Image 1 (cartoon, helix red, strand yellow):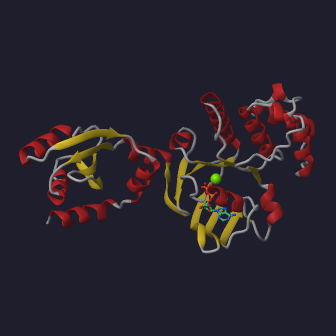
Image 2 (image 1 turned 90 degrees about the vertical axis):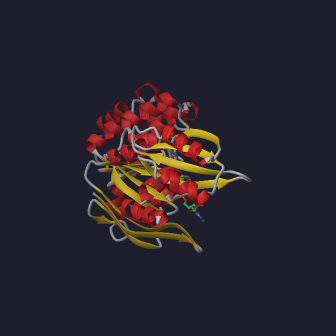
Image 3 (image 1 turned 90 degrees about the horizontal axis):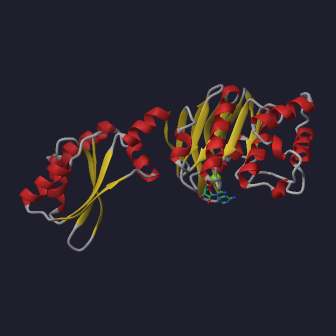
Length: 321
Ligand code: ADP
Ligand code: MG
């Protein structure tokens, strides 16, 4: 349904998007995940024809976005980062306005009624947009994207600024949309997309670092136990010692102070390496200055996902020699 090949966008000598390729199948819900500044909005603006790429090719439902712009655009409903709402219009006026703008051919009354029902905005239909809550405004933004019943729905950070209850509502709405549409949504929060998306494309600094089924990514994230340990002792020997502990999958230094070095230690699922760690340090007389268990943030996920396990083993072997 969507085919992106070698997409590049640079501003001066700065690459916002640097050679991105991916495909999205019919009725797939794909999460576009990455920290702020990763290139998500730039990519979405190019996919929807709002921004031209420096290089690369985008095809939407078989239509090239450059050669066949009108047809490609007709296949897409887009909710940009800042919803294109007209605050002084009522919801009804606004959706009718969008209907005309898109030259929609579907039965006006029936179509708009369906959209209002699915986005659950019927009770604010005659209210002026500027007086609506953030959650309702976001729903009106999504409703606008649905006008014309496009095959592809692209939503840029659809849950940003919403409260937890509204987030759950928008999430459910996106799930419903996925039954009849191909959906791409972007976010910088992993848990946002874990619940809704079939697949995650993770982007960092303009490049794709992972493109995998959500399940695989979730597993990579939750099956790791992580500790941060501050230890006094000779760094190389400490690293070697910790890496030799049964069940430790990764150990790196992340910082140092005058007399101690901080290490991040990852171990296999459900394996608590604190006892063997303590025994190791006590045996070697390396004082333990601090120990905390940690969750994974996006940066850690990138590291976990981009480390090639075969290379990792080789690295470890080289170090242990
Ligand atoms: P995201 O949506 O993932 O937060 P963006 O696509 O908005 O990221 O931005 C990607 C990078 O491109 C950022 O470093 C941003 O500063 C830069 N960028 C975006 N738009 C412009 C622009 N019009 N001019 C210069 N740099 C830009
Ligand atoms: Mg953005």
